[in-house]
Length: 289
Image 1: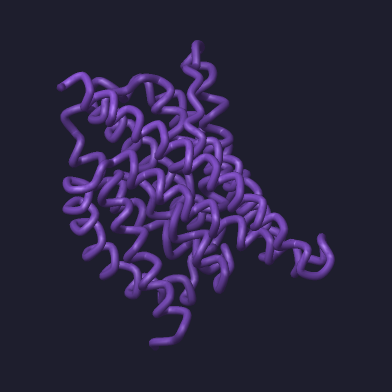
Image 2 (image 1 turned 90 degrees about the vertical axis):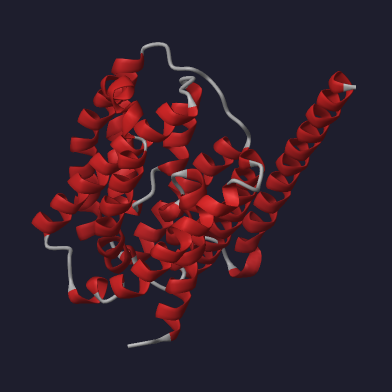
């Protein structure tokens, strides 16, 4: 049945699928912060996880030529996912929806800002760090169905080529979505309300992914990625501000000062990004001349 919620969900997932088609990730990072404004994790997550299994399998298959070069480096993260997913699934099954959404937004906001700020610090002990990182990623994904921002930061820091980056991303995300689907099934989280959302999401993905692939060939990838992160940060900040008020953690509309602060911080970072991009373009033009 068509409702206002399903229409908004269809539009949101169309935008998110376009981002995913362009960057290879970003579907949940865009969908979840917006959809949680009108749905709960317990209804939304079980609808998204099976779809993400298929979507991540497609990303990995599309970049299968690089699989042999990255699977050993990705394996520690995949192993570390297991205990994290068990913990995260337990939280989804037992924590109240308001506080679960609050935890989701609190976890996402600093990750998005780190990525937007261009944080770079290569990990020296990749194997041991990968296990710990995988544990945290498993909790984050099973609670939020989001892992793109921290994964993108981690894999970018390790100096992977574009093809290797996408293959490692597809492998880890396929592992986390598949294991989360099994954990959700065991915990009895799949329900009719969640399954009823899937027919509204799938057409948006089928339309959005090829649109994203078309757009990224005509738009500077770094610029597209950076604008998407700003949009994400503002939505998460809005959701968190609203929850601060709903959960009575901050009185009245003072909660929206958080949103204003995030917009200010991100605007400064966005200005610096475009200033550096413009300086690099001018320098390249001068070199050519």
